[in-house]
Length: 477
Image 1 (cartoon, rainbow, N blue to C red):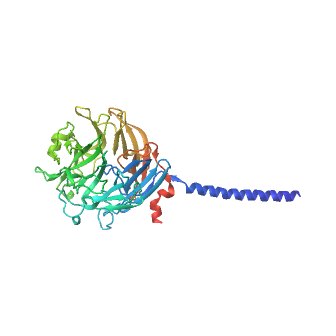
Image 2 (image 1 turned 90 degrees about the vertical axis):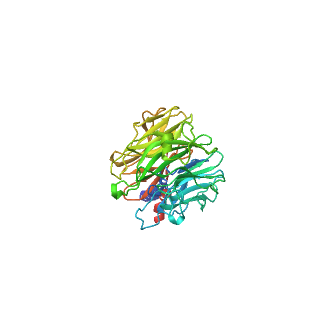
């Protein structure tokens, strides 16, 4: 009897043990299935985002929409619902004319990265695909040709990122697209109308992006008569109060000589910092003192009327700007010492400039790192920069730098993302950002052209279920 009881008890223990083992396996399977990662996609491609093509993201009615350059340089879009914590996408928006030629010497062009806008009817617009257009697209009356074709895609339904159509209603010769929507719903698309030796223009739509005006030039490329070079520009445009748009820009000395001759060629020899503004109601361009500027603005006009600071032999790269509570412009511009007879771009630190009401104040040594990014002013006029840099040991980092009200000295106050053996391509700040989703970065690691994509906010990256984020892995399978 005792033996029988023993056998029954042992059998019960074995059943329980096997049952528990199965439950552990089942639980582990569930945990693995719902495992999260800190990136939202792994199919970013090349320099998948940049500050110049902006905005790359918009927060609208509880959802953040983001775009980036994906495989074969095609544009992709994803969205994150902040209430439900759910991701949608990424979905391919359209087909770029770049990234498809296996015989092209430069494998990835990187100039056709997408930018995004939502019109007053809720339709989502993406501009992408251009690096000045090609001769097959016709004659470029405002500049020269290079590669790709500027394209404009619109969602088929409002606030739906799953289906798109491409419209033939903007110039094919654009690159560096920058969208701005005015308070009355008018849409401006700013871009360079061709390759390096081209005017900067805008096209205006008053019907939610269904038709656009002809391109209107506001910065002029022009051959110099004192050297073998052409004047060119790199502006960055942002919206101010009411009808005002604000522009920070630097000058590009586009030389005739080939790199094999002097080691320089037409690479980005950029200098100085300039500022002007545009009244969308009157159509007038003015400087900081409200002097009316003749447009398109030439180098001579820019130097006489719009100069913020000269950088002498230092090279500049990618200005950004925001306005304080009094509407005064504050500017960030990366600046680095020119390396003579070298094609290598020098390391550049962020420099800070601002208008105090009577003159431009320049802080060229604010303690910020070598790196680039975007800036904003808080409601209390404290200056903040979001910067990507590579720190000691090759670690990539994205961090918030605070400069207080005067911006005399900046301190790193929050690290948003750090990854070993990597660096980051960074976007401009998302339009109307949610605190949890302020900017987009792409992780660049050696040995691959594909990038993990991150959506960063005050609490770092927004996570996603791993099987959803591995879109490249799924497409390969």
